[in-house]
Amino acid sequence: MSVDRNKLEALLKWYRQEVGANLIAAIIVNREGLVMAAVKGESETEVEEDVIAGVSALVEPVLTRITEEFSSGAFGTGTFDTEEQRIIFCEAGPEAIFVTVLDSIAMVDPIFPYAYLAAEKIARIFDGRTVSPVIPKLISDHDTQKIERKVDKLQKIKVKSGEYAYKLILGGEGGVGKTSMVHRFVENAFQTDYKSTIGTSIMKKECDFEGLDSKVRFVLWDLAGQAQFKRVRQSYLSNAEAGILVYDVTRKDTLDKVENWFSEIKDVSPNISLILVGNKIDLTEDRVISTEMGEAFAKKLNLSYIETSAKTGENINDAFKMLALQRIREYVFTEEV
Image (cartoon, rainbow, N blue to C red):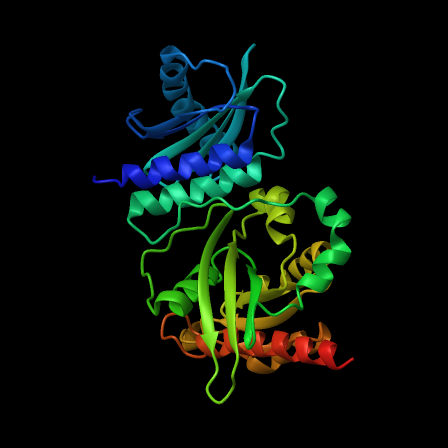
């Protein structure tokens, strides 16, 4: 398999920058234990070759045990402590494992959001999918509270005349089609080989409006729906200005869980603009949630509602443009007040 090692190395450099002084090393290994890319931390701590070799030998059996004994599916993740290091390891898709070696006194919880984000990007690089190596800075809950008032003002500032930029998150249970919606919107393509998102995936897209001198730039954060990622989602939700709640019209349980997602998102970003989307309407024979049920649920949460098919592309652009127009209207209203 041909892998873009330059992109892997660039990703690790961004990761080192965001993790900071506690990082001893970040290592990407394939399933055969071969080191595909590695970077040392910026501290003066030396990383011996036997440490990297030992990590390579350690991770696979531990991840396999976690996956088998705790039913964590394709997301084997865990930590391992030695006298001198703390090690975080994440499965990065079916081909790779991402290892973070930290100082023994480092706190691991603030690192997990970055580790999951990097693992998702690594999986995409191995698959040959479109991905940027950039690791953005994630703002902690404490930092968010400190700058909350500033953020409320910044959300309503235009980049320049007629242009707006927003962080947009997609929330909903695993398998409802969030990633497929993003790819249809950004690349106008549908991927038949489903791959679950690890932590979050980030892409960018602009919306143009005919007849309006306005352009909206979205930074799209596709959030993993699996329960094991709930611990890191608050970091990804911070400062989100717009969001799409997605459910699968063929699975009633995904609609039942929407209210939990709504509360979780609103707790972190109370001023976010949200819409509700019922996806997979192309599966007409399997459908169990009617349009009327979806509309009633959206009314209950005071949200706009639209139905889509990521497979055919039906209403995908309309869903994102609906949200963009909602944000523009809120900006204009605020300006007038």
